[in-house]
Length: 579
Image 1 (cartoon, one colour):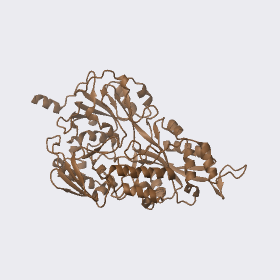
Image 2 (image 1 turned 60 degrees about the vertical axis):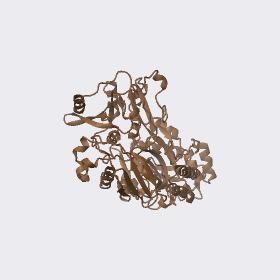
Image 3 (image 1 turned 135 degrees about the vertical axis):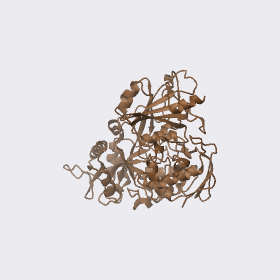
Image 4 (image 1 turned 30 degrees about the vertical axis):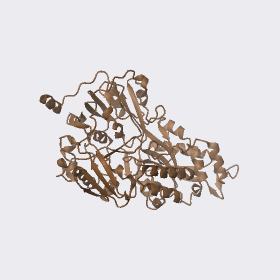
């Protein structure tokens, strides 16, 4: 199970960020590129998109509940909920907010009041009109979701005053300006007319979660069960969808425990798609002439924090030493060996492919000679023939690197250790449990260097304030305790400025300062892979902010050639009878 842990406090002042301790497996980048689509030469004379057909996918994971307020820790549920439930705000591929249910919105001059007007033509799958009462109800459920909804998201909505002004207009009042606010309007909306008489605890056990009513491009049709176990879900196209209805008539998802079983299902002709391609099936997937492999950058960053205030390791305070340590890492070899050539070398703290990413940041290549020279220039030299560790004024260049105690991070830490010891630096690596890493080391700032993964999912806004602003150095998430007034000023201006162009300039400047100072070492970003039969066309993918984002353009998917027969369900039988 993937272990997530939230480390934020007041979300009116801090965007939701998480440290993620995971097993990084099966990520693609060596052969495919971000945004890559199947070679056009493989689909010659493709007919015009047409409606109809059934898309069946092998979904790796387990069914729990089809409810967007209950799916934070189950990716398989989020995949389906993305199709079933609509949202006020969605995002373009670069993370720029895009209106979905919202028709218009206005922001007060001081940036603390947002008036949102909904489209009047949005219907629930049962024909009822979606109103602002549904939005307020959903927010109240989020607020009440202790133990189920992440604490930081609950805290965020607790501090926002929400008022319905009419059935189509809703007002949000913030305690202070917060530029990323629109990103927090991307939650799936629940129907108040069906759930309004339930408490949060009652909703958890409601039958609604097994037969949901949403307002998204697809509607719930039926569960596939075997021996009283849920083995799949059938969805049907929402013909009354407020945007263009989807082309594929029926979406069928069948659950599988792992990617290997999912691939076998494809090879046996049971499915047309595989939700997750990990390293165990990557090779077979790449050579299968009937499969198109799609890959996109995940919202995660692996990096090394230095404790810049720890007097036991004064060398970390020297920017040239930090630059030397990055130059001394063979990150490409790590990607090739540990991640199967399937990750993207990172150049900074902001995710590539987003509107805030500055592509002028230079990539630091592996250069042990340069690293050695920088360390020498900083005064760390070998003292004699029998000395193997560099030192300066009696201080040896030795330190401890902590890492999450799992196999992938152990291998990564060992390669880092080898690279740095080749520079005559002594590095002791130690794996610790997740709870110890957070409670005993990061939070109390009791560490020298630490290898971590940052999970930046669930909100595309790139606001890096929590980890790098000087205000967060004490008691916040600025674990390196980087104290840079100029960088902090850029971050603070960017989170109160709603103009996207101005914000992008502030973040550009911040990234330049980060590149110059290098308070931490960015290593790489993982990528996510899924595979779909070449019989399915119209599939595109950009950088992901959640794995369910792969369905961002699902309305444009269509099937060419012989179409699989639609699975007959009670709802289809009923509609046939009406005709």
